[in-house]
Image 1: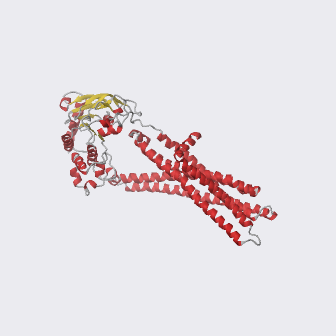
Image 2: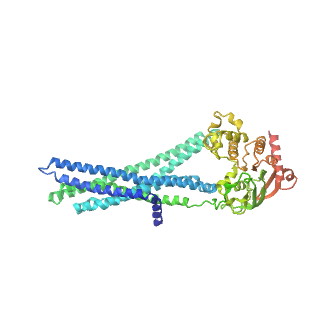
Image 3: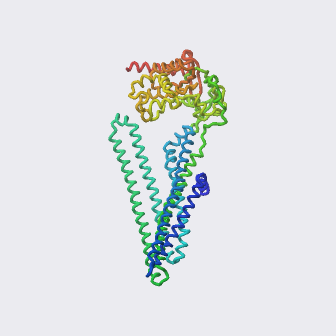
Length: 587
């Protein structure tokens, strides 16, 4: 697994290899200057003897200042280069993940959990950025610091060098011990913050239900509990940090004190100059930060590699619904885009289900025909609606649009030709006009008005304070259920697709409005309409009805003929009529 992870790191860095190489060169230069400066200081201190030349000392001091300034500038450049690589990888990877997620089928996102996917696209990508920025910079810098500094220290005095750095393994162990705890506590703090944010978002989304049932007090208690948990996790992290950093400072000070204690004896015997002792102290101080950071770096490196695997797991997941040698449907003329759907033994099976959801459906829907699909809950109606737009995995040779196998069509072309309106039409936090033209962002204002009029939404819009520019709020919260459904319907109508699939999209609309919408669509467009509906009164006005049961089409025909035949449709019709009579009597 370690080799694989290193391969992944190399793959992410490969597009930025020039920047990484330049950053590595600057690090080498920085560490060479860092070793050179204490040597120059040593020379300056050793020359501070009786009869020294002030001008010569001033020149040497100026030279040290110049070296230090140059080192600072180059160090800044090295950090910008290497941290910049991490940031660029983060941006590219997040974009790549987002585009990859858009290619996945909705069922997989839902089964995986949107929160899990978001976590990998945010927290894990940030961990990868730290791995490829901070961790690589710190590891490289530490290796260079020890590789260049230790020989210089040993050249001054080997025994003093060993005594000075003898406490550094203790410092590294301390950082490793506290660093792991800090990482866990930081992760726990982030999880508590995420839970707190989710609670706020959920309560704001369900503020209406909270007020209806008078649960303000219970929600306040729940928030207070979450808030206290977040506070406690933050305090635990703060305690660990406030314990670790004084410990590191203490170990560093002990190393310097040990160096002074032993070095004073070396000064007295004449085996070490004052300048040499000062240089050793500077070297010891220079190694404190790289040594302390090494422990954090190793933790960051481990966390980053885990995040690499989690992100790669998403990126390696191939969508089950994708283009495969698409035919050039774009070249078809308007006359060829008629909207004729034909199913030949259509079968759909979900991985999580034991039986087929659709089992061998065969039918033909002619261009311009208004067809209703009815049946009991769970019979496969919604799956059939999604199959028309290839929103579920399909086998070749089972579903055809205008004689072309939908699995051989480009998904973009198929979904331009088939507009699906789900029962829960999702609306974005934007203006009503933007939501209507979502399927066709280039649509003119006149086209938006026409689509709204067809969806019987125009009269409602006149009552809105800002008309078409009214902001509908998150998920269309400012609109009623019927208005949301009609907005989603208007969005589909604006696309001018030859096939319109209504998946119970008029469930929140009364029968008269639903009939008026269908009449308006058929009067202005010759498109094929497939209407999934529980409202059999609306289905009765359709050209043909497909009756489903247990994933099969058990009856089809016009309403007047189906109610004369014993079977599923007659039972559903009689049950609905009885329910309506009971409602009338109760009212």
